[in-house]
Length: 261
Image (cartoon, rainbow, N blue to C red):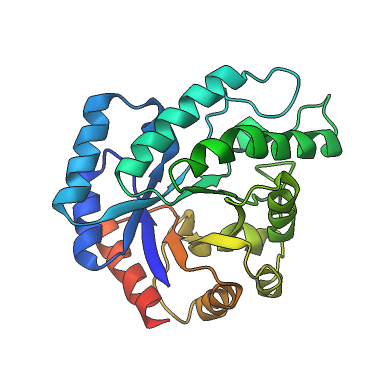
């Protein structure tokens, strides 16, 4: 298993520390790749190169004003944004883009579930996946808890969407936080062998007044069960995605926990 950590493009000091701690890769926001200015991107790229680490994953695929369900979908705007982000991503080692993006995908009151699901499948098949494929990049749909999204809430729904879009570079994702909230079992991960291509890990409860924080102790949660299910399913990449209280302390504790698994 390769372990990464989610860090913003502008957090160069934290990227350097993550590399020194032994994380295998960085995961950053796709909006920075798709909409950030050239100077910001070049600074990010130089930081990665200087620290001998790659940006293998990217989350936050679509901003909320880049809608992919409903009646008003601007495919020209979507295509230009995705093309720029994928091109830049490929230059820094991007392998997987995470499609969570509740604001862009959530169903409005005029769109029923089946229509919305078909629109998501069409978007992946006709727009996102073909562009990503040019750069050898996969697109995985992230199941989100119902408090955030009214469509695709479980790992099995994510896999069904990947199957429906019929694209070789589409897949599913498992996020330990959303799974815990939705009572989505690790057994469901094992059912998705060959389809589950990326994952997120965190301590899925509250600590020090903050929800969803970095893992700090191997015994505080069944992290081992999560990782074993991922490995059984053939998933080889897992990123820490959580709120941080003290980066130096929390990142060091998290990588120690993960490497012990």
